[in-house]
Amino acid sequence: MLELEPPGLTVDEIAGRLQRGGVGIDRVAVGKRMAELERAGSIEKTDETRLNRNNRQARVWRSAT
Image 1: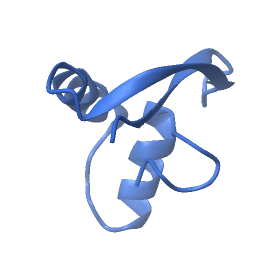
Image 2 (image 1 turned 90 degrees about the vertical axis):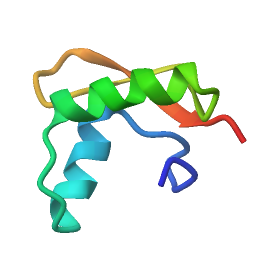
Image 3 (image 1 turned 180 degrees about the horizontal axis):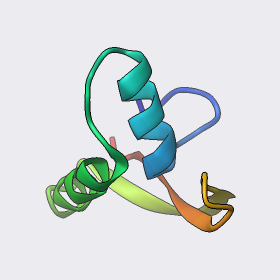
Image 4 (image 1 turned 30 degrees about the horizontal axis):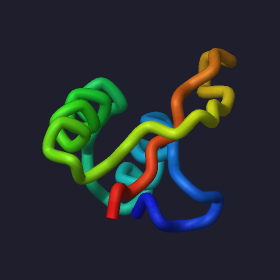
């Protein structure tokens, strides 16, 4: 999912795509999973940020592979 355009996704963008895909998961749960995946070396933070649904800057994540 993180390889889709635009490159990388924020936690809000991931949660939105999962919800549209029929997976009932909120952004808090996604955020917790992102930290686990980062520790495992599967994903990494980028230097990019985007506005989230609360108009705050949110980190963009991408696949580490």
